[in-house]
Amino acid sequence: MGRKLALTGILFVIASLFLKISGLLRDMVIAFQFGDSYQSAAYFAAFTLPNMFILFFTTGMKNAFVPSFIHANADGHGYHHFSQIIRGTMVLGLIVSIIGVLASPLLLPQLFPFSNLQADVQAEAIKLSVGLAVVFFIAVLLVSLNSVYEAYLDAESKFSLSVISQIIVIGSTILGAVLFADELGAYSLAFGYLTGALLSYIIKRLWFVPKDSHKVFGKLDWAEIKPFSIIFIPVAITVMVGQVNLTIDNIFAGSFSDSAINYVNFAKNIVHFPQAIIGVTIGTIIFPILSKAIANANEKGFKQGIEYGLMLTLLVLLPAVAGMMWLMEDLITIVYERGAFTADATAATATVGYLYMGSVLFFSLQNILNKAFYSKKKGHVILRISLFSIALNVALNFLFIALLNSYLAIPLASSVMALVYFALNWVVFNRTQGKLNTRFIAKDAAKIIAATVAMLSALWLASGFLEGLHIYIRFVLTAISGAIVYVIAALALKTEIARFLISKLRKS
Image (cartoon, rainbow, N blue to C red; front, side, top):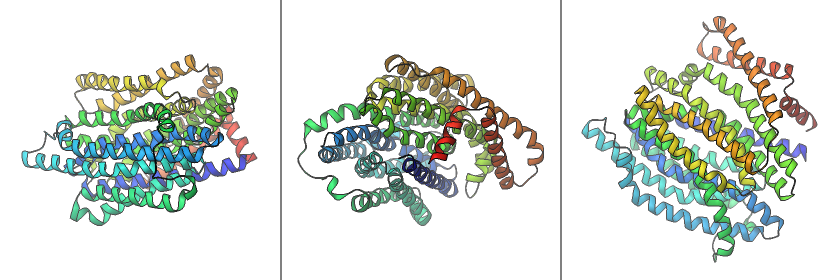
C-alpha cells in the first residue's frame, strides 16, 4: 500500500509539473506574441469571468465528488451516483454557458472599459474581450463534463490521468497561439482552449474512464442529485472566491492602465507556480486519505493527516517562496523577456511578484484546511469566511490604493487578505472540528523557518561570487546551492516532518 501510494504520488507530481510547465509555456507564448499590449490585457480580462465557472466546476467538483463517490461506492451505488452527477452537471453547465454568452456583452464593458486607451483602440479592446469571453463560455459546457471525469479519476487515485486531461487543454491553447496568432490575434488562444476542452472530453470518454462506470444520458434522479448539490454548491462557490478576487484585482488594475492588468496576471501566474505544484499536489493526494479516515471513523488519523499535510506544505513551500523572491527579477527575465515583452515590463512584473508571495504561502496552507472541511462534507462552514474575504479584498484594495496611489497596492492587498483568510479558517476549524496539535505544528514550523533563514543567509554570502555570472548559470547555481543548504539545515535541526518524509520514502 505504501509503495503504491508513493508511486501514485510521484506520478502525480510529475504530471502536475508538466501541467504547470505547460501553463507557464502558455503565458510565455502570450508574452512573446502580445507583450503588455491591449490584446493580452483583453485576453486576461475576458478569461476572468469564464474562469470563475471553470474553477467552480473543476476544483469544486473534485472537492465534492471525491468523498461522495467514495461513500456511494462503499454503499454499493457508485455507478448510479456517478451517472446522476454527470447528468445534473451537464444541465448546469449548459445553463451557465448560455447565460455567460448572453451576459458577456453587457458585463465586460462595464468591468473592463479600458478607459486609459485612445477611443479607437478602446473600442477594439472591448470588442475583443467580449468576443473572447463568449468563446470561453461556450467551452464551459465541455469543462463541466470534464470536471466530473477528472473528479472520478481522482477518487480512483488516478491523479496523473486527471492532470493529463488538463495538459491537453493548455497544450491546445499554446498550439492555437503558435499557429494562428498572426491571423486570429488573441482569438487563437480562445479557440485553442475550446478545441482542447473538446479533445480532453473525447479522450477521457473513450480511454480514461471505464464505459461501464456510468451513463451520461438518462433520467435525472433528483433524490440522488439534491443531497450532492447541497454539498457541491457551497464548496464550488468557495473555490470561486480565488478567481473572484483575481477579477477584483484585474478591475482595480484596469483603473490604472491595461498594462497593469498584464503585470498583475503575469506576476500572479508565475509566483503561484509553487502553490500549484506543492500546495495543490499535497492537498490532492491527502484528500482521499482524509475522506477514507472519516468514512472509517478514524478521527485520530484524520487530524494527523491534516497536521502532516500542513507541515509538509510548509516544509517544501516556504524555501521555494523565499528562493523565488531572491531570484524574482532573474526568473521574470528568463521566462518572459523576449518578443514583445520588454525589460520595462520585466521590472514592473517582478515588483508585483514580490508582493504576491504572501498569498502563495497562505493560500497553499489554506488548501489543506479546505480539504479537511470538504472531507467531512462541511464546505458550508468556510463559505461565509470565503465570502468575507471578497469584501476584505475590496476594502484593502481601496485602502492601499489610497495610501500608495499605485497598482502595487493590488498584490499587497491580496497577500494581507490571504493571511487573514487562513487565520480565520484556522480558528474556525479548531473551534468546530476539534483542536489540532499546535505544539507539534509550532515547534516544527519554527525549525522550518530557521532552515529557510539559513538558506537565505548562505545565498547572501555567496551573492558576490554569483552576481557576475551569466543569468542562466547564476539562476541554476543559486537554486541548487540554496536547496542543498536548506535540506542540510532542516535535517540538522531535526525537523520532524522532514524525518517522517524520509522514513516513508525509505519504506516505499
